[in-house]
Length: 500
Image (cartoon, rainbow, N blue to C red; front, side, top):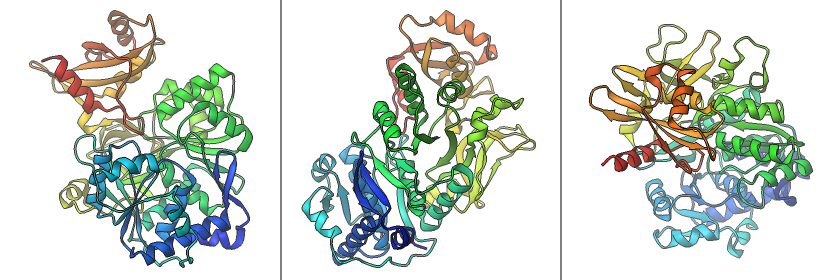
């Protein structure tokens, strides 16, 4: 089934419902949303775009992002959303690798891309795009569940990004499991797009279309804490996706302003480690509005979920352990630990089910390494407890092996973050001749914050002596990707340069 059928069906019966907003201004109801998407599809077909072709999107968040999504799908083509923070040369690599025949752009991104790529560009703010959306509408082109819908490029922090083949069937499974395992959606709800629509926030757009909910793009085009608080009060109930660092920032701003987040229905968080102290603080301030998901591009948004009830529960005897987990397997997948003999054994996390990719795009070597005997090898280390809750340790490549013993950076980071003077921290391994590796920490601390001796003493109250950092490096910020994940590869390079 083509995921674009959902928009066509909603337009038939609920076309008058408000659909697309820029700030508080309605851009389109569902009838107009569908009309523009179908017109774009007709224009793409007339321009030679065929079913299965790839159409790239190098755009900031805006209502036309959703029109482009559904227009491209209606034509039977696949979307290639590109992270808006990438350098034009990085975006040009994705255009070339995907074989995209066209790229839809916003002006500030299109100008740089035009200098490094020969692919045809279409500015979504132009009269040409508006005319295409007013073209004769095209009926939704039939697609099979295994056909390509979305070509998602990984962050590429350790090399060239790989294209993840996301099919219509995968997107359907991810959308429906949202309703079962993450949150209910009603027509009165609104999806608020602060996080990049090229990533998880955009992946959740179809389920909100299916339920005829509103879609709001903030005027800022990104994450502004005060703008969100204002919009929630005026236009709620709002649901949104946040990276853990966004949750931390949002909590700090809201607390300083004395605002409790009225109008916010649900904050789904994921995409990186959420530290226990941060989510406890957020729930204490905002109440039971949080759901955690764990997924990867290779199984988008759909490996595990920690329910609203579990995130807010403080009565269960092991509530802290559960809150430190990423929840239980979502309904459409199986989750297992490679080599585990019993609950609690740590190993590589494996997943299989309908949302798992069939392959990487034109990369048989990487596909064979990642897809083994029907399982997706996630590269993440973790364990399952007796109740099926999955707790992450670290990426397998980030585990520190010192004297033959595994040390999980996240455990050390959690311990350091319980010190009131530590705001952010990232732990990596440093080559050490006798032990193989030792532990070092990059720390963002408060003004007049803790000394090395203070943190050493603090660690000894939290974790075993051999796990404590052997060196601390004070930083003003940690390098992060667009989704808030700390770039440990960059920290390793920085460490190598410091120790030359």
